[in-house]
Length: 83
Image (tube, rainbow, N blue to C red; front, side, top):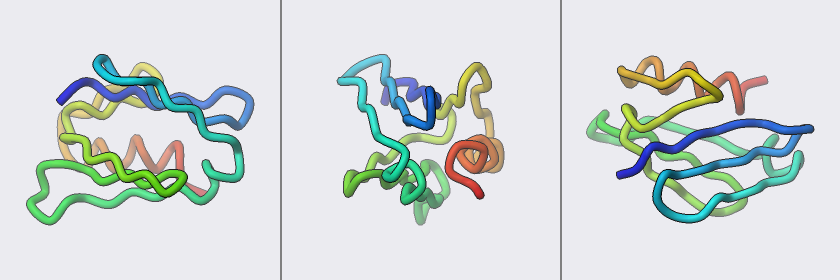
């Protein structure tokens, strides 16, 4: 899989992958976004706007911080989607 970078700009979520297309989600969809570890613990399933993206935990990056463990990936994603 490719590196997946999550950033927020003016309450808009931007998901950029090193391969594939960049996705933009407005503030309402950002608030409804969710994530969970996969059953095998090797990736994280992120749901935004009805789309599910399965990302290996080592390919999760939020702003400039990249995860090296599943726990770090969940913590980083919580900084985007958490309350």
